[in-house]
Image 1 (cartoon, rainbow, N blue to C red):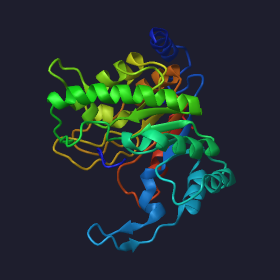
Image 2: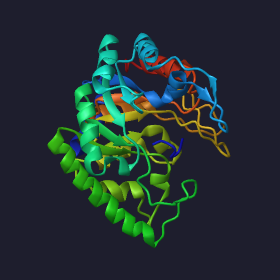
Image 3: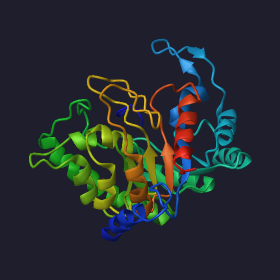
Image 4: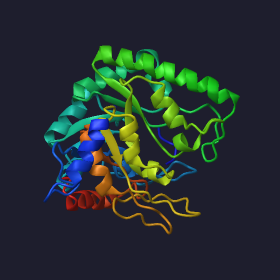
Length: 315
């Protein structure tokens, strides 16, 4: 799902010191965040499986109420929304409360979904849930861009200026409403580079205020060949959530499995979780949000991912 869908110098020093303390492993830092699941990971388990061509229902889903019950039984403490499932905010909130879960974020779609009054509507809905984190998980790049092989052209310069100004303005509106907005990455944000070799990712976060959140997907960052830890050092204090995803990609592999602790594909370099944890903790990340990229009709990936994080002392 590369683009279909769709909130330190001292910190770095602290992270390094914490990892060397006697009896302290890198997964045992103070201020440990909670673990949530991105509901997109099980969207077919919730809503059912449909034939790609006819859209006919092939396998029914269990519904959002049962899915939230199952998520709580696995041990998750929160969820990140990926749609509203036809529920009013008070209805969604009751289901969350009934299962001891909280909403830690909302993937609201591309940047056009936070234009004008749409942002106010999203903020009002999420505030009723108790959530203040609104993330655009894709579609921030130029229109008609080839996402698999992004190439910088003259239109990119114009778009880069626009998108930074847009998010700076939207961040101020969101703040006035009691929320924050930000973006989530895939590979292309690191692949799309201008003539100076500057990535879309760096240009975006250097061109926006600290009020614009950074939700880093550490699996996609690793897949792109970049160090997730370095992003927290470069843009500190801007991350409420991170996407805990494994790098399931290898050489000439297009299927991204992404079960935590299981890179799973020939040549795939897994995320260095022991290195990541103290850096993210020191930066103040509050939620690790598990997202898996396949087996959407099953609880298996999010169950195995939770077990991995538990083995590492994250939950």
